[in-house]
Amino acid sequence: MPPAVNRVIMKTYPPRSQDSSVVVYFSKSEIPVHAENLGIVSVYDSGASSRCDSVSVVNIIKEEARKAGGNGAYVSEYIKPSFWGSSCHQMTASLLWIGDFRAAADTGIHPVAQLSELKRIKPERTLSQVQLSLNAGYGFRTAKISDQLTQVQQQLLRELKSGIALGASGYYFFNDWTGLGLLFSQFNSQANALASTASGAQGIYNIREAIRFVGPSYAYRFKSGESWLVGMQLAIGYVGFEHRETLLNELYTVEGATAGTMVGFDVEYKFARRMGAFASLGLTSGTLTSYTENKNGVVQKVELDKDRWEGLGTANVMLGVRFHLK
Image (spheres, one colour):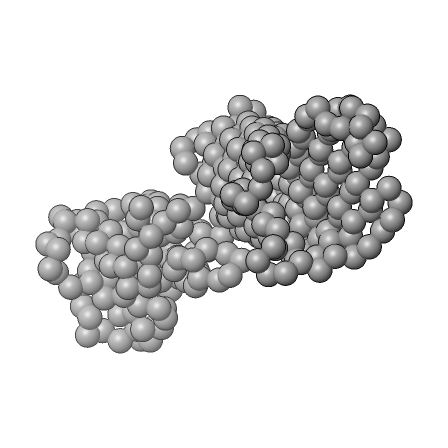
């Protein structure tokens, strides 16, 4: 969508044609004598703006000047794109009618001297600085099940592929759009089957698995209407894996960790000034190349061959509540 435009028009002349010339000044000293101020226009990022390069923004200012019947504009504020701010060029300008371009600007006091150095874009914040979220839902593992396993093993793994997903996050936003914070996500699953020990005793064979992600995260958000927010998150951090098997008095555990990433998307509806409800999709990735196993008290480190590396990817669909502070 195009950038947002705010305007305050104090005086107008007949609108000028689209091909008429408009001179844009970035220095007040260059403006000819007796330039008449018609109003003010601000072109700024609405939160999801495109086509907001410097040329496009200047062209918007020129078009606003033509609509007001002007033939000049003085840019008093120019905010360039920055990593923590907007990706758009943003400008505030006074719209001018200039009767004589030949008159020098420095020949004494004239109306242009009364043009204020307006700074209108540095906006009042409309969104919170601190954002805390809690969410829960359904998740599933994205790794494929090997066809070399037995049917019983494949059935157990199919049960372990889906489970409960939990999440939490906290962010500090430098402006209405971008922030840094900490993101946590956990996937839990379990499966049960009737099995026998080596001695022939029967019991319930229980398997539990957990995949946890925690790490620093970058967040981007923007408003869509008065009550809706759209957010995206990217995190790099720690991915931990736990696998636990029990059968009667026998215990077998596997623990491992690796580096991984998480990408998140959410849509939020703010039902109160400081609270909102949201739906989210989170995609976690990581690959386990080694782990520590404990078999009835006997502990050893296991290095996996490349063709046996364990994929820890998950996809989590969740609902949650969000708190907006400050």
